[in-house]
Image (tube, rainbow, N blue to C red; front, side):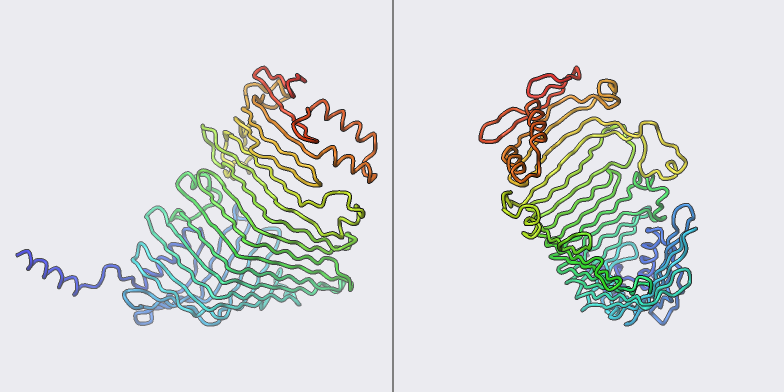
Length: 505
């Protein structure tokens, strides 16, 4: 009996269409749900063609806050058609004319038209009406500017081109009732972009820009309300689970700009970087934005600089983390900037140090700070800000920490770290600032040798040196090793300030 039931179930499953089959209407429904989630208004016709569905010209518009205007884009709609294995193929025309425009109250309107080629590589959607994954792959695309107008008047002599090298994209969309979740991963072999502008006759010149990247990767995840993103209600939507996260990496990037006016070069600059990596996350915990890059270089030519300027470095990094929503509990704040191996060309050194008295060592700079703060208002409650409904004390501070300080250049080096708690109930001891309690220590090496060299070069006077060394004697003490100075700052519970054990407040 059991075998009979199993055989019957198997035959029934083979005779019944797969539940995971995706229809063209369901595929188009997922697209529309994505647009709604981003707060975008869609206008497009739908024309059934047998089992396929052809979408007419699409207009996507986004209303700017407070009714001050809108931005929009129009382009030919895709064709959804049944594919193999219950999938749906999505195909755009080989050549697409795209319009980008916008209008801002009291500022005017502008519109750009582009023509893209190589857009006909079909995407494949696989899944159900509630969750589907789309994959795209192509050998590349090219685009060119075909028109630019401001206030209805055509702007002549403007050119722009973009080339997208082979790419692969994968996007998964989940409709979870109250929210729409989208995850995307993309790989681009690279891109090239360039634009040029012929300046007005009075200026008599041109402006050109180009840029490129290789080995790009993009990862992103968005959780948005199905009713649509609303910037004026962002604080409420963040509490409701809205989140945006992305990471962009590239093996290398470069850009260049050149401006010529009146037959002379007004500006000529070029930059490049290796191992580019930028991440961003926005959610109820706040904004977390960070990035790193490997070896970088910049070349700048400017009439105000007597020689072309070239500088570069080994690595750079930064991070900013800020809370955005009001909370009864203290939240973390992080600010960091790091620059390693900064150097400039020998020509620049020779301008003010032709005898090479100063060490040519590359410079290092690190400033890494963190803290704890309690917000008394939502920093993204834009309606309250516009109405002026802001508390007298928008935030309180609980802790301030100097995790790392490094400034190294010209043979001298300063390092430091410190940690302080802050008492918001005592705003008198330090003239309106919360009273700190804690300590910080600093170490400086090579400072006296640097000062002696600057005096020999005539860049500092004896009076300058005397004043500096008197000040240093008050706030520092000799450390171990040659030309080493130490300083320890302590602020106690009574608000007393001690430097190297000596009370100065």
